[in-house]
Amino acid sequence: MQSDIKKVAIVGAGTMGAGIAGVCAAAGCQVALLDMKQDIAQSAIERLQGGKYPAITAEQAALISADSIDNLESAISDADWICEVIIEMLQPKRDLFTRVEAARKDGSLVTSNTSGIPLRDISAGMPQRLREEIAVTHFFNPVHIMRLLELVPGEDTRPEVIEQLADFCGKKLGKGVVYAKDTVNFIGNRIGCYWMLAGLHTGTRLRAEGLSPELADAVMSKPMGLPPTGLYGLIDLIGLDIMDSVAKNLAANLPAGDVGEASARLPTIEQQLLEAGQLGRKTGGGFYRVSKNEDGSKNRETYDLDTGNWRPAVVAELNADEQDFSTALFVDSLAGKFAWELMGGTLAYAADLVPDISDDIVNVDRAMRWGFNWSQGPFEMLDAIGPQKFVERLQAEGKAVPNMLAKLLESGNSYFYRDDNSEYFTVDGSYKKVPVE
Image (cartoon, rainbow, N blue to C red; front, side, top):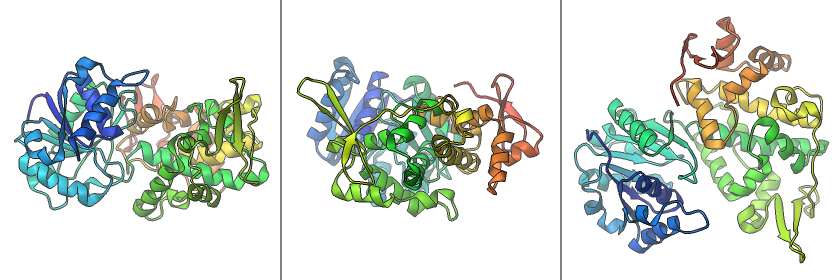
């Protein structure tokens, strides 16, 4: 096993692949960036240096060489780490890794950036050497800004492979490494995409009671410790086409009986917007749109999901109790009802996923803070609310108590973190030291 990673080969020069190449070059690594054609990879390198805020300097860009996949074997022959970032389809990935395995040097590491295809399917039947030295390194876009890196071993991946990748990605690339399991969407997207899709369905149900996108986003932003885009603004940023793909992947891969199955599809109205090409910001508008008036001022509009017409956007006002998640979830109001159904449901979902998606709560909390810019992770939020209070609300509604909440209260403890958050509650009912970030 190599003691250090000095040369990296990135196969796939799209936004994600180029971003990974950029952070590796910024860390001083030699990088080979490959795509179907060499000029595609070269254009990606140029884009990294462009714009108002370039991702890399010209000196760093000089560390990246562009090449074609036709020359894969020679390009990766001396690489210490080969990272696949191609189309999210199983067979092309398997075909690529067959070529990679035949050409790579002993001790090199191999990873996939997949978020939707199980590593076990990618590596099934592959040579033992590859199975022992392959993992998932799941970066988040934009790579040079987002801190989260989900690191996922396969069934046969040697522990030292994960250790080396964690050390390199954490110390050299400056990423916040979380350890996930080979389950659909890993940690961040499993919970974050549940929140988004469940949010659309909850919004659909509560629209009859007067819930508007503005009110939904007002409560699902600063009051919850979430980014200012809120729910509908975030989906506008991502695009309904991407959300549709995410939903279909979840529907196909979620375990039977998973709570997320109920929302693993777009609601009818959103499906109609998708079919009409009204996807979000990239098509000029989705739930919201912004245009400029002749005097240079901005005209902000909201798409009325009931009438199908655009109307002037309004500012939703929240009362004092609705402005903090620890109280908002329990307020008898439309905003409070939305907060409880969506955020309360998301916290309950997260508390039921450990140890299935991660061995501990710390990795879950870090994934949501580092990958989705939540100010607190799900278990930190539950502590702020009060686990006992949260469970009592669930029980009053006849709902099941999630696994980790049940374990916590059965153990006689009151909080997931203790001693100034220096220790965390484990799946076996004890407390352990929180690992240094």
